[in-house]
Figure 1 (tube, helix red, strand yellow):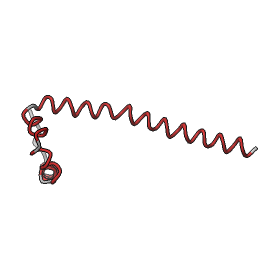
Figure 2 (cartoon, rainbow, N blue to C red; figure 1 turned 180 degrees about the horizontal axis):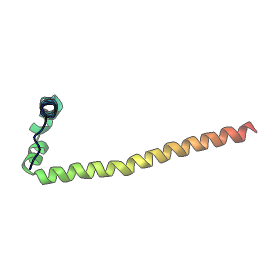
Figure 3 (cartoon, helix red, strand yellow; figure 1 turned 90 degrees about the horizontal axis):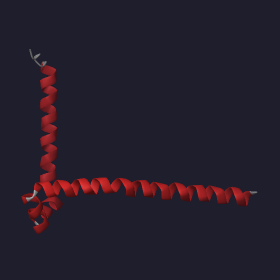
Figure 4 (cartoon, rainbow, N blue to C red; figure 1 turned 30 degrees about the horizontal axis):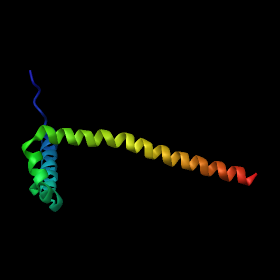
Length: 90
């Protein structure tokens, strides 16, 4: 049998639902989001949700290798800088 939820759990869930609805409302009322959804691209993606999800996943997945590459560039530059300082200091 299902255990009944305590009043504090229900209160926490209602608070979470209220915060989530406020967050979604703030996204929907954002002027940039409204402008995008009224654009032809936004309307097309609204009519094709699978394509919108595919584009979103593609952007998220492609950001990971770019981030790793940029970290590699930063660490390589720091290593080269430390190497130059150590070699010139001797």
